Amino acid sequence: MQKYFEVTGGSDLLTKAFLQVLQNVCISLNSRVKFFIQPSKGVTLCYKKDQHLFHKDADVVLVTTTGKAALFMDFNPPLSIQKMEALRAFHYDTSTKITLIFRQRFWEKDGIRGGKSIRERPTCFIYYPSHSFPGNYTISVILASYTWFDDSLLFLGASDEELKELHLRDLSKIHGMVINSLCPCVLVKKWSLDTYSLGAFALFTPYQHLEYAQELFRPEVRIHFAGEHTAFPHAWIEMAMKSAIRAAVNINNEIYLSDTKEKMSSKLT
Image: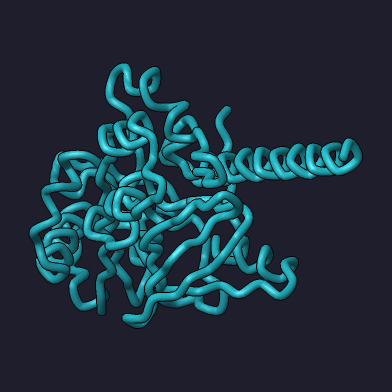
């Protein structure tokens, strides 16, 4: 039986736990990496924040953007032809999530706690919460629609209010009651319109796994790559984490080998 796990209290607690363990680490939010330079030693990266450019030197760099976002970065020397072909050609899919916030959990009157409804309508899949939110026992949310592929593309041109009206109408048909007054707001996430991700997740077309899987993960000298698109199966947070661990192990091994060679060389001289 397949099992699913969640971080109780919110997934952001995981990254906050990492931050507590790290010492003297500065995280620069809302910053866009523009280019990398690899001289004879180390890596220099340039990032933009608040319309200003900043430079940072490092021994090694791990790039964990989405595959498509990496295309907006410049590399000097350029990435290999094989790497560029893989980043440009592999299929990246779209996804949309539409969340409705309610003042009452009206669905619990129908005995619904968790699970999903399937509709032959644009909403497709409706997911009901199986847990409460810390510190909030009245207001709750429904993932009114979670779509991929062409089903998700349908929503790209619609406004948030149009999507709210559509999904409230569908929910009313399921539960047989008017619920508009119970819903103060809607939250819509369209991953293809996200300026940082430029898509939702990798989804290889036939033969792309054979052609591009290894190339997407392969390092370019001192620049390494990780993310769900570099591991398999795609689209899972777990795979993104596993790919990062794999890259970290490779980086550690490379540094160890480099240090060992330097020590041996110094002894010989």
